[in-house]
Image (tube, rainbow, N blue to C red; front, side, top):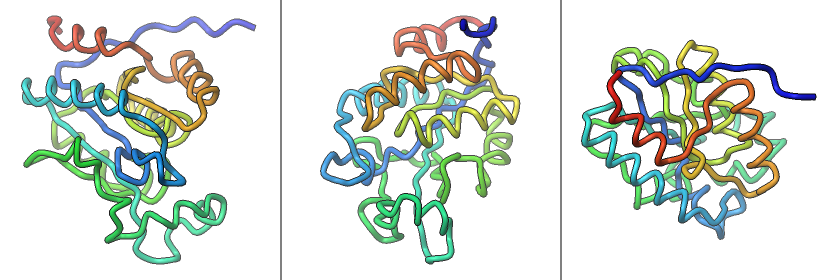
Length: 199
């Protein structure tokens, strides 16, 4: 059965870059949560440069737990999440992508960057009218965040080179599904060109 007909949603005048869970727990291939993602880091560096040069808003997320009663079912389902305790290196943003002054770090306990956080009012305060979602992992927190972005009425772009997953098949299947229903999955070159096009 074929996908439904869909229409590309253009970036707004003030897109926000949302880097999902590019913390050491996910970018370190030695971590149970991590994967080899050097090319994902490189793509995110290019996006960071582009957004910073244009004065556009940038948001980072990290999963962090303070107490055992935070997200207990999620953590029982995936015990490796217990590594993401406050004070652990695992919750720090990868030093190659460290947030600049004035950029927001959103702490979360669940998959979506919107669920149980103040991301939505922060986006509105920043004047964001569309989202570019990147990070780790495609089948988990990236997907959940992109879907919730749409559900909050933001046009969403997912940059193919700037997302990754431990499972390549899951990565490709979720990119297909995101593009079919929730977001425009585009290349890094397309996104950078889009930033320079008049809107």
